[in-house]
Image 1 (spheres, one colour):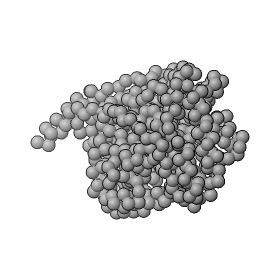
Image 2: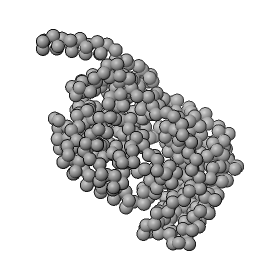
Image 3: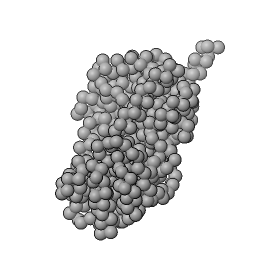
Image 4: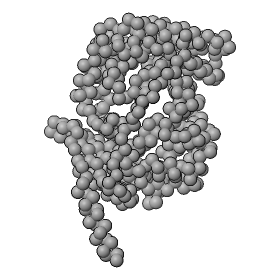
Length: 459
């Protein structure tokens, strides 16, 4: 009986291996920059980018789950789980996990966002098999012990406290709430003290089993690597864990759907005894799949993306009203945000807000001159390339692209898309985005009279 069962299992495994699908998504020159994808039976996708000129490799696993997948009662569960996967598996303790990577001089970490989670390790190319084994073991074999949940709860509560002690960081969570309200996108990724205290090991285990199926995962690896070897090592690790159970399973599709974000004119003030007031003035942006995102990227760069940007020049260089001032965009599957941040003395809040609002209105109505657009295009092209100069950045690019778009774009194609943005494209997106009534979030020690005037900035 055992012998026949083993042969049947071997035949099944052999048949499953025959249907693994490998594609070359981007063909590099002499193998440099080649991006390939293999989809295993069981729905696990593996994407790699080859860069033979380096001596390192970064290996990561992306999970199709973020804080927007949480119910109100589970707020913080995704981030809590991120912590717990480092606490041990059936074969490794938390110390074993960290010591294995430390012993080869590598670095290992993870991050949780609103729509995805990523775990990664960066090591010498010769130590890549170790990194693959450790990270795959963490993702497939976490035991989530009750005692680990209790211990890590304290660490997460300290992380929440640390964030709340940094108003320049906390104001972005407040702005998300201002724009989205009591919607998953409006809740903090870390959760709150109340929700974190209420999470139990059993609830987190159920969350883990639901969202860490291979069909919800993307493996990404970049550096001096061999695609086929990476595939074999990842496959062996997942099969050892019994994770590739259904050979007919297909990868989950990128998030889709559309929801209109209609928030306008909202103001939220969080009183804090801080030396500075921290403000975010903003409005709905674009979904990450919107083709106008390239033009918005150029607009964002020109408005608040560097020392020559309009906001930096007007607020800091000419008037000295703030040390830090910038604009930014956030794109989600079905909506987005555009925001302007500044930190200033409480007495200067209304002056800073007036300047920012005037600049946004000016650009919305009259657009940007051609020379500013041309400079922003050059800056964005350069920063795009310079931001991809290490294997960690390359891993992030191909992993996020596979999970969020289901496709890959070469760096040359990205640069071409940026270069093809016209002044009319930028002016059009400026009218559409900046012409909307903004909302405002503020953290600081504003007095009653100052607070009552905040609505002037969004009128």
